[in-house]
Length: 120
Image 1 (cartoon, rainbow, N blue to C red):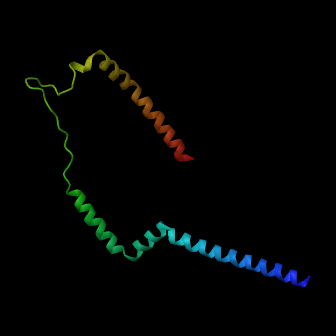
Image 2 (cartoon, rainbow, N blue to C red; image 1 turned 180 degrees about the horizontal axis):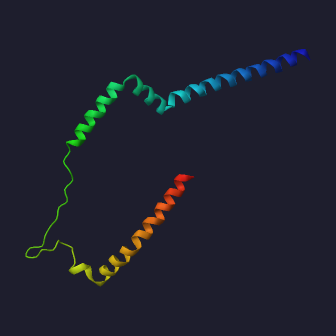
Image 3 (cartoon, rainbow, N blue to C red; image 1 turned 90 degrees about the vertical axis):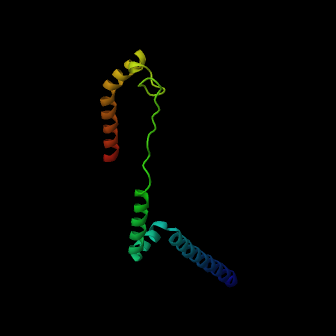
């Protein structure tokens, strides 16, 4: 009877030890995979390097050429290619007038939705 209790106690102790080891390993894995903490400590330790890289990257990006829109004109007219006559026809005129009226309403609606979601 005493031998069985000793076996049970040793099994319980082994399980408790295994759980503690597993818990420690899990904590170490979490610390190893915490990218934001690694980046923050790297920025704190090597701030001059990060600032230098950011300045160089900003300078390189500022030297890239700007995107230019190409406009093709039809020969003999002053219209752009693909553009319809005056106002794009009756349907285009109707759309422009309806959109001109609906645009403030749509903008106000989405602004209210955005402000409500930010307040929550």
